[in-house]
Amino acid sequence: MTRWQPLPAALPGEARHLVEHLRVLKGRTGLSLAELARRTAYSKSSWQRYLSGDRLPPRDAAQVLCRLGGGDRTRLLALWELAEQAWPQGAAESPAEAAPEPATGGRRWRTAALAASALAALLAAGLLWALPRRAGDRPAARPGGALSRACRSTRS
Image (cartoon, rainbow, N blue to C red; front, side, top):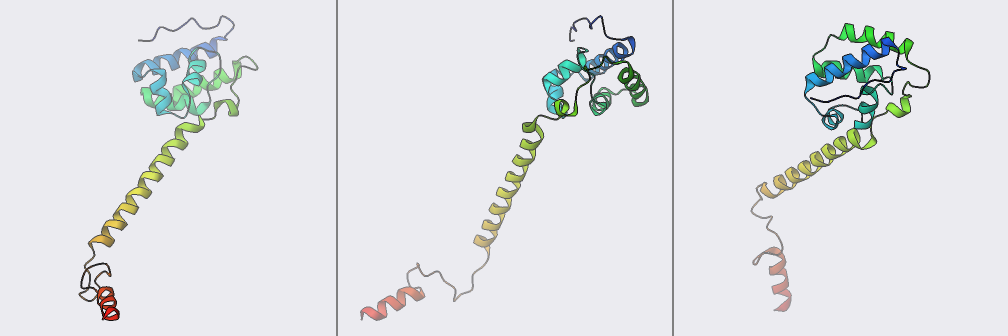
């Protein structure tokens, strides 16, 4: 179980309740911060800021953690709303800071698209190779093929 640092003394009670609740939910998941980051759109450092009381987590981040930890969504949202109103000015995370790491979601989609394209190319090549050929459609490079006969007739 994670040993958390004490929350900042200046953190209002409403914000403190939210962070403590998020810490309980995170504990229920059994995930490390790195694993939590891999399963969500938020980085490890963002989760560290949210769970240490440095930043108010975005509503979506709190909801994702609630879902992963099997929490009561209604209770969490009530705590989040109260914490948002009481959170010290300047400590809330801006949307730009809370944006997902560009490499996480994008890399997964790019990898999946490349794998699907490669699979489609392999299937197409396999189908073209496996299609039956008509008797008269022999490849020109084979001995006895149309090209070989034409070359022999010019030599004679």
